[in-house]
Length: 223
Ligand code: 5RP
Image (cartoon, protein in one colour):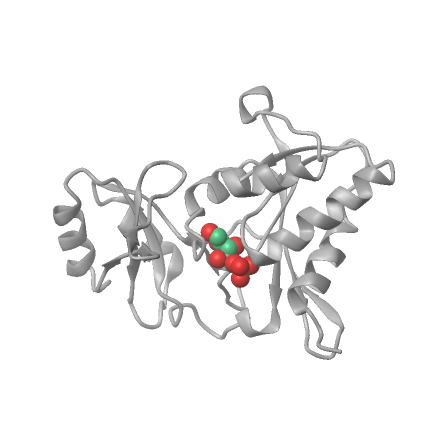
């Protein structure tokens, strides 16, 4: 039987959720499995409340009976579980393949523990092969794209099903090809200095642990 590496990573991370926690829910096909497993644990009696990093994760969680709390009612999140597109040896991440990078970063920054779940193909020696998603406001986008190009990003405005992709925040995603990213924290700061950039998919210094699901059916934890 084929091993579902995303699912085994997700289910291992969900074991770390304890009674009484406020839990952040990530977005994407790996976070999907975490949400389903959390829902099972809630049905078994786990008492938690959750906040989500996207409308689709919130809908999925509510559909499966996970109790919800508004971010306006809480100051901290105990544990957030989310996927990633790339993980480097310092546990820096590229995120935003699903276009939810801004809300994901808001949750990660407010979390005491930020646990990342990936299949082993996402673990890389340096970030950059995966195009870096940058969330930009539609206003003045030509100028913002010019500035991203001047930084070397070769931006492409994301489309989905032949239509411009619009984030949950009403913004656009510019997928940027910087090549190998030698200093993720520096590039992240440079990107966020561009007027019109809301945030970017580099997550640096935020990760508590990465649970990696492997083809042989095992998991490992990077810290
Ligand atoms: C969404 C994300 C996802 O976590 C990332 O794209 C990984 O997705 P998947 O688990 O589907 O491979 O950042 O914005």
